[in-house]
Image: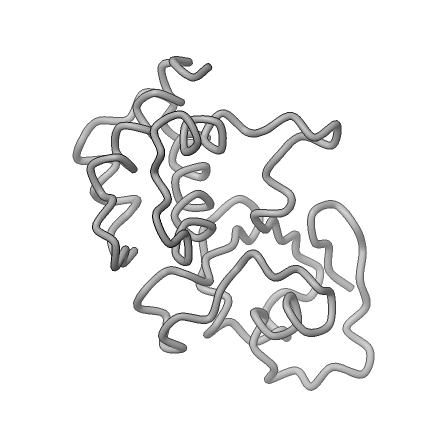
Length: 153
């Protein structure tokens, strides 16, 4: 058993070596986390395991037994109200192609949970290893600061 966005799921019938990413996408239909590189280097597949960002492409489903996963689909409040970062992403027009953004958001959300007033160094460390081919790094940083300061519309 494991939880995804608060809902319990069974591991029955799933090969324990199956990457979490494929269980999320193919079994549960949660397609927000993306397949990018397949070797945990780009960050497109980032989800949170008990609030800590992990790369779902390289995490076997056996490693999450009894754990809690949060995906981009679970970042907003149950009533549909966007997370402050999601709103900041919109307000600061962060996404271009958008492919990497779910992973970026999941790492940024973990950062703000741990450090509500992050420094440039905190952001650099938390977002290290996320690759945005569109180069929206400046807007990502602006959106993180805006969400941290409550400066979102």
